[in-house]
Length: 362
Image (cartoon, rainbow, N blue to C red):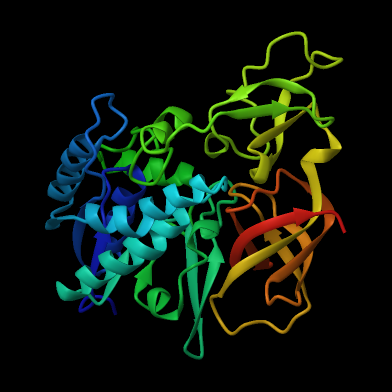
């Protein structure tokens, strides 16, 4: 059934995309692969591994007998993903570049380029599933709860889903590594990539300070008591513990400190000690709603995630007088973060999502 369908898989040099390529071949597709380079900034500390990743991707392609294309999307990544990422941080918000990267790079410029090379569809190593019913496509969660990546894919639409395959959606990460080992793929034991999409894992605050100016302000407790200076609100996020470096002499207990709020107008970072009530909010407002299928009738009872790997939380969505989504959770949520995505689910179906603008307690 698949023998006349040409699929170009995004081969990153990791184990997931390697096994995705193998599975597509076993399913009878005409398979080619494409390696994307998306970050040009000089990196002498080993955070960006593009050269090694390309080498591994080529070895996998050679072993599986598929043609490997290479392309440089760095300009697109800078303009459409990284610049937005920096602008949001300047505002004191915490964006999710992986979400935008999927929309603007993997399922836009990569998809367009693959189609220009004669592909019928593209494929990636995401842990998610796609189903079709009467011409309408649904994005579903991956069957491996620990690896489900539908959260990062909520900005996809009908066109992208109709042209995409996720070969790993029905299997576990453990099984993926077993398959890679059985077929002697060089990536079988390769460590998963982490950190910012295409940029890698690094000291986040130091990395941002390369691109954003420091704007020193005060770190205060919930009562407004001065604790120390910060280097800029852009370098902190809600719920953050590591990197605050608040020593002894503050607080009545030995419990750690966490970021509870950013007072943008005063350039103040508010921190609290322990599992403080100020870390929790029951409601939020969100903008830029994107629905994968037809927009739901509101109010809607469903579940939602405010961060990747979080268990879905029961909530009700409605619309406020300003046209934004108003989400009220059954239970208060910790570290609701403006700039991050809230993604909505109906059981295993991803409905879509929006960008968190503010939070409060209703």
